[in-house]
Image 1 (cartoon, rainbow, N blue to C red):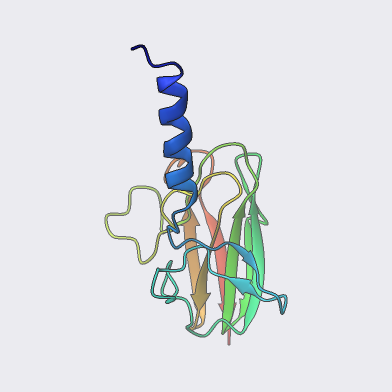
Image 2: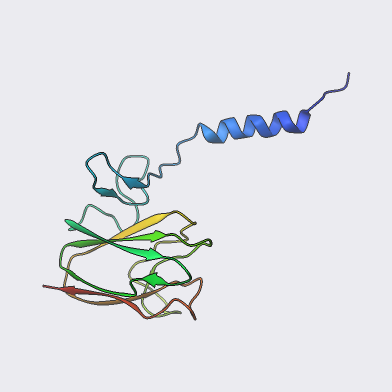
Length: 146
């Protein structure tokens, strides 16, 4: 007996299996209009930089056209910066200059449409870059004022 559509059936079953899985990622606004970290772990705790820190206010930085927009922002202590990848390729947000051996934070790869946030809880200047495009997307800053 010959089976028809075996590959199509297998693909459909895999799509159903994966579609029904919860990988723990939640992106976007909550019903009250506040922002959620790009990654929420299965136990409900925030992913990314640990979230839930001091981020009482949120500022957005868009990633588009192989650039951070704005490239330089100034925020008060206690601000959560949310990076939103509106580009057509993956990017990341990595603290420091390209090639720094141990950055203080990093988003990991952000696919188009993905978001990631970091809470800035003390004053100072933080330099960051996209380690995937270090010659084009570098020397961006978050200046945190007291």
